[in-house]
Length: 493
Image: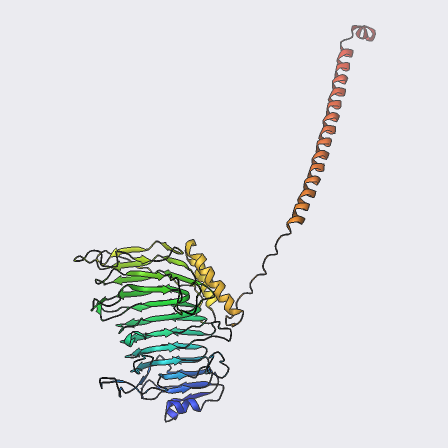
């Protein structure tokens, strides 16, 4: 485990970090409150842990005014966050050799991570390659987790962000921030996210940038009416899977608010070399929306990139949306303005199968996907998990998963992470058609000769059998003639 230190032995959390060796190590925190005690993490493989299911509260004073003089912002580390990792240097931001890679954070609650009008404050601001967050929570933060791009010198996605057992309340301030806002990287995993009463942004925002993302077992029980909440999971430009997630989509307090999506996917934010794939399986949405038609699932296939300088046609979106339970509050006063009017807005490449759409007053049963026997879903076992997942889905969804497995295998070719991955079989050798045709001709000739030999043998055997029968008949006729000769009888008497 390397060097282990204890926060209680130092005056500040920054001092505890600085005492670690250059190759990193672990700092253990107590489950108490730490005020204005952020850290700029400059070393790789650093772990901050509050053990034994405890939770350390990292809180900041709101002592910075907004334009109206209200004290609503905090003086965060580097004006970015509470825990901030050192990233790759500019101008290219693709050399992570001296970055604070593979930061691990477990058992923290972040409060008041808010900065000015950019809304880019965060409890954890990940700027390096690799981030893992376990059992963490945020309250009144712009973003609880915000990460930068992870790309190599060829602009390919690399690295990972893994978030396990994550909670947020009253976060996503201002519309440009979210409970978790993940920038482009190769592998994004969000398991057990729980978010309630988002201020304006999304519970999970996945800007994949040609990476693969999965949101599993999300729980977003927003109140019936919320000011401006948007999506449970909003994704763009890559492969996204949403499985076993629940969201109560609130009605908006204002008629001007976007209520048109609960789970959303688009294809135009960043170019994706692996194409765009959307998989949604066994989710449950309860829509309270009364102010707009909206969609339970909106997969928007756009025809131009956001970057006007990128003239490429965005990749076509394919995928599978199946076995989801979609319930809605029927708008009696204004028929047609509820989620039952147009439940799904998807392009032709996305297959819809066995989705149950019903009003809220109808009895229902939601059976999430049984994950018994599934491999652990981590940054080092995504291929193994998706391989298991493929076998659990209907045939119509298996091709979607197969395309994602191919994408993950592609990452392994230049940024390997998967552990105990079976070596892919050698591709089959293309057949030599002329040789095969010559072999067929030879076989046909040999077959004809064999048939002729069999025919000749059968004829020979038939002739021999006929001769045998003829000799036997002649012999029997000869014996019968002798037994009937009277002269022979008299001579013997």
